[in-house]
Figure 1 (cartoon, rainbow, N blue to C red):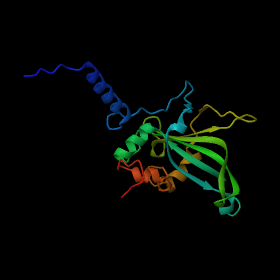
Figure 2 (figure 1 turned 60 degrees about the vertical axis):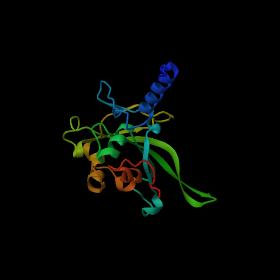
Figure 3 (figure 1 turned 30 degrees about the vertical axis):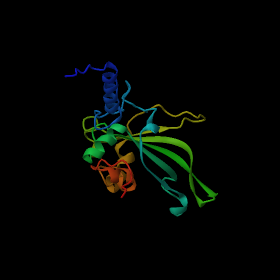
Figure 4 (figure 1 turned 90 degrees about the vertical axis):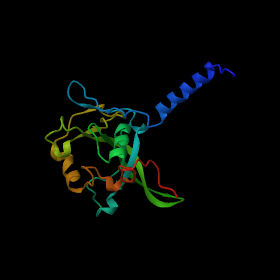
Length: 204
């Protein structure tokens, strides 16, 4: 009977393939930790990689559609941290440590080959909401709200933010948001993936 001799190269290749699968396949990976970090003054530090998170939605509320005076004449792009999205698509719930960040931009009108429309202007602020039942035990939905404004006469933004007063942001979220104070009705990425694991549009 022929005796098979183990091939060290093949064994090493197999181990590397398994390691790669564990790194790149979400089914093998453990849930990512929340990116939320506070400084010694209990201010939330702005994560500087949020544009690499999951973009879950965008919306605009221009003056022209609000009798010439919108409460917030701005365009918004919303990002969700990857670990929270991973949890959301498995369970349909926002985990402790979920961090949603909203880039707030000016609204510009334009005329192009596709017709007239609205485009994003410069970023003027970044706003965030963080879920933590312990830290925000007395807040509606256990969410804390934050805002990183652009510094005056500068291209730089605040790198930390104190928690905003409860009545500053939570009112609209409490009365109008579809899921746990989050406006998922405007974010198809979240409505499609809620407890389904879906990460793309459905196909035939």
